[in-house]
Amino acid sequence: MPVITNIEDLRVLAKKRVPRMFYDYADSGSWTESTYRANESDFQKIKLRQRVAVNMENRSTATTMIGQPVAMPVAIAPTGLTGMQHADGEILGARAAKKFGIPFTLSTMSICSLEDVAAGTDRHPFWFQLYVMKDRAFIESLIDRAKAANCSALVLTLDLQILGQRHKDLKNGLSAPPKPTLATILNLMTKPRWGLGMLGTKRHGFGNIVGHVKGVENMGSLSEWTAKQFDPALNWGDVEWIKKRWGGKLILKGIQDVEDAKLAVNSGADALVVSNHGGRQLDGAMSSISCLPEIVAAVGKQIEVHMDGGIRSGQDALKAIALGAKGTYIGRAFLYGLGAMGEEGVTKALEIIHKELDLTMAFCGRTDIKAVDSSIFVPGTY
Ligand SMILES: Cc1cc2nc3c(=O)[nH]c(=O)nc-3n(C[C@H](O)[C@H](O)[C@H](O)COP(=O)(O)O)c2cc1C
Image (tube, rainbow, N blue to C red; front, side):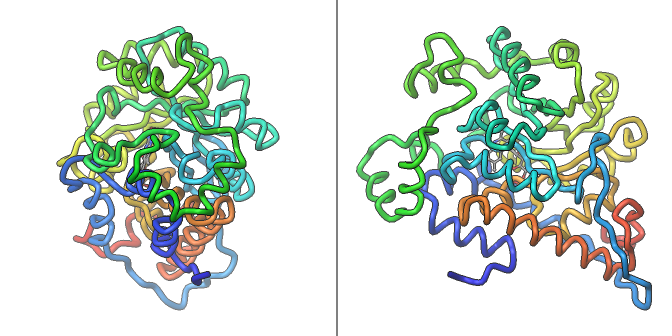
């Protein structure tokens, strides 16, 4: 077993252990992947100021996101098909997040259902991410199920009215469960741990959907249904309707533009997430971290601003916080931990990020995450 000291180690191990179609699904962006790459590389351009002889005892990374206490301002992002990276992946991720004291967000397109995650975490509150589908009765039932599952925030994703294209997914014939082609079977034979895990669970399809929508009993009819169901007509009127129907904390995810950020404020949401869906939707868009300062300047006093995209270390998370984000999310860093080592791997990913965040804060001469601002940066580098 290799010694795991950073997120890259988890990525390498996940690549070995997770079937190719699901590893590729995580480790890819749309079209040329330029935005996917920029999300990571733009963090490197921001340089930190080292401070010395500052008392660095008694440090704290604890703060709040939408008023909820968090051990560090890093939540787990919603990711579809997580239960295909590792058997029962969403339950394991939610358990690791609960133990660490950070929010876990369940995707609409998860393998484990809302009810599975609630049962698997003794009804500890988690967040639910909603995609708006044309079938409004189904949306209403999902919102009701999220309330019944004790979800403490609804994360409404606005940047997937239509699907960005990822070449690898098309070439790999991505599906859940995988279709038994010769290439897939040969690849699965090299992933015995993954296979054993899958034999031990009954959760192999989209748990929030199969059995809850009339006519969707199996994968064939499901893929047809989802292709038709994502609603290209989604608009701010729908946001208002969903806000009313949900009635709890609402986070709007997928904001990149200042004009949209202002509309998000008008909608009365509790937070917005500066996000380009991890470079999986509009390739050629700016990196998330470079969009953040302008959005914070425009609306940061009126709404809580969160961000995700490209966070692979605690340093990255700290940079986003110093630029004004009140919270961050990790997508791939979480998935790599999960694919590499299940729940233990997610915990490892969170520990790595926490340690890097805490030590970087100390090197910059700060002891409280709540007091970190852009004065930790070298002027002209951010
Ligand atoms: C494999 C994968 C699946 C995703 N599925 C969803 C999803 O179902 N809903 C959603 O709102 N965002 C989804 N996202 C986007 C993430 O929530 C998040 O915005 C992104 O992963 C952040 O970038 P990072 O992976 O670089 O941390 C997905 C991302 C990945 C990598």
